[in-house]
Image (cartoon, rainbow, N blue to C red; front, side, top):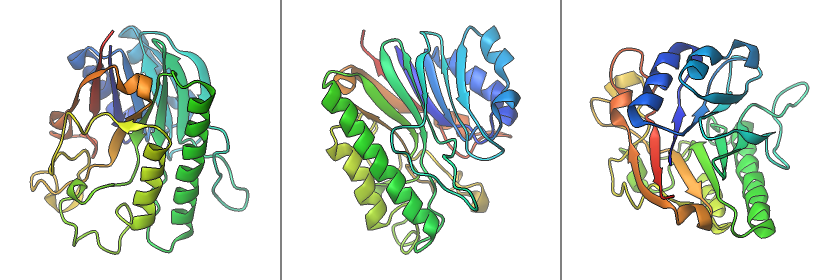
Length: 264
């Protein structure tokens, strides 16, 4: 079984790239983030013609998550238990989390809030969002320790110094602050494991490069896209890779897909 996660940065702009990704890697499941469209605007037909089902959740031109599968798409859940809200004057549960069972695996497509800047209320929202995710994920494992669950997506956290091109550049900024790193570590402490890093270790294995300042050709990136698996899921992972080629060329997303190989 082959699954992947990708922040596509607008599915309507990159549907051809998404379908090409499915075919190039012979993927069974693809979790998408930042689809940037309402459900009625989602370009379903190209995926269906390629033999895939799609579950999506989008409220407006921001955020948005989806799961594309050819191995089943059951028990679709929008948001996780206790997921916090954001916005004024009426806070809403943003389109940032979507779960479904695909091929016996509970796959979550997650788009963690950015945080914006240190001291901003959006950072408090981000930390609360991750804390609630940890609580929900811990509950899933408590209910069924053998559950196969993977939390995939854009976490907007670089948990280690080696996950950024310059520690000095990110000092005093979001994504690398101690509270954000502690929140990410909290999900690991809840019983989930980073199933990609053992297969893609070391500095320079980035998943995101800003469009500005020629960050990609300069190799000035960040590692912020992850797949965290439950023990039963992690035991099935036989390989992982980052498709850096997808970041190249005209019209590329600023993120690269992260791919997993599963046994059985």
